[in-house]
Length: 125
Image 1 (cartoon, rainbow, N blue to C red):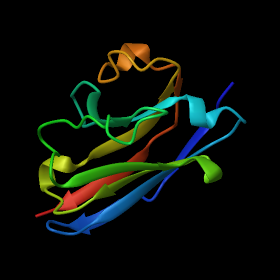
Image 2 (cartoon, helix red, strand yellow; image 1 turned 180 degrees about the horizontal axis):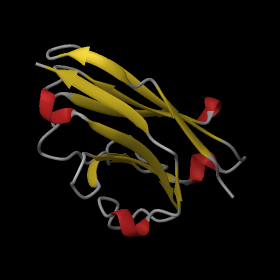
Image 3 (cartoon, one colour; image 1 turned 90 degrees about the horizontal axis):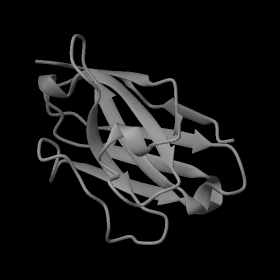
């Protein structure tokens, strides 16, 4: 069982930066693929970024955030981060972190086994 707790959301102006954190419980954090997803009002939850357990290279991003967002993890702290720069109003959403046992199809919500409760990010224009 893995419990995930996100933090770092808030209200910021366009062009600003935020860093989201997701703290995980459990001793096997380092073996999980970790992902960030977001959900805006009236829309489906969508993939943002992911990082597999063993490869710092395999970090896919959604096209909409590529070049602005960076995912990273600190296995010693059981934490995954999402650095968000050059924020836009269209980035406004609830951001969720998730953990998956697999490293396949990691842009899909269906492969993730555990989810956090989400943190709100609001970007004003």
